[in-house]
Image: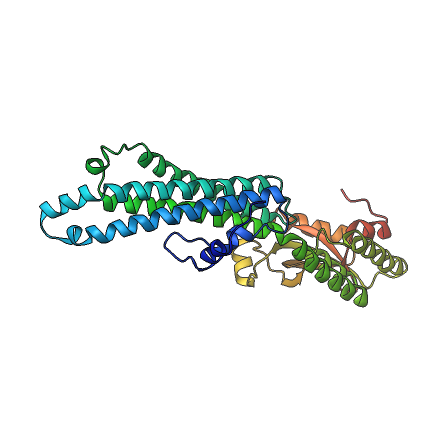
Length: 346
């Protein structure tokens, strides 16, 4: 690996010109890069430093022509354009070195991101957006540079104004810098996956302990609503089934606590009775609201047997309505309730 001099390291640390980059862009993958890959990064930084050197030369040239460019006389402005040819060449060389360094880092980071795995779908989507936008910006920057590299020394004076060249090449470098930052943001998301998963698993375990403490059907359903693919999802489903069977077995000799209702609506948002009766249900039965599994659920009617509930459902006027069952106020699997009644659903 090439040794970077102390002077060079200090230069990078204090570098704050218009073309400077966020240091994190260079160091974000240090902990996972091989020695050869670290050499690629250090070589890239060295090229960017060379770009700084040529930019400084251009700015020195600018000092000699500043008064001519700000003159109101066209003759002096024309003279300034002629004298700025050298500065133009320096700026093109600076942009070329910037691009060479940025391209090396861009390619390295893209290689890492192409094999990156994201635990969370939303992070994967966001990272892909960063990558796509980064590719677009980097390509835009390079197209600008290609245009200026095509100029010969002979036509630099007359083909393009110095102010335009400076603005275009500054935008080119900004685009490439922003593109690298977008890849760094995608990498940050990738590297955060383990910690984020650990945090989610901890919250999952805490929610599960809470459900176990309550040991009720609603508690386990709430756990599943929050963690549908959680660490204890299958166990929660098994607990619900066991508790439902326990409830229903207790009702085999008496059904006074077993109630059927007709559900007519379930939504994430809360509805008023007026809204429901003007848009969903036009009958006279009282609409009852309950909140469960992250939904507001609305039902009508109350029956002690499935046959009566089904008959009411068929004539209530709500096509999407269906029969639900409760034991002691807790909703249970209706198929189990029908087993208790000895009824086969049709």
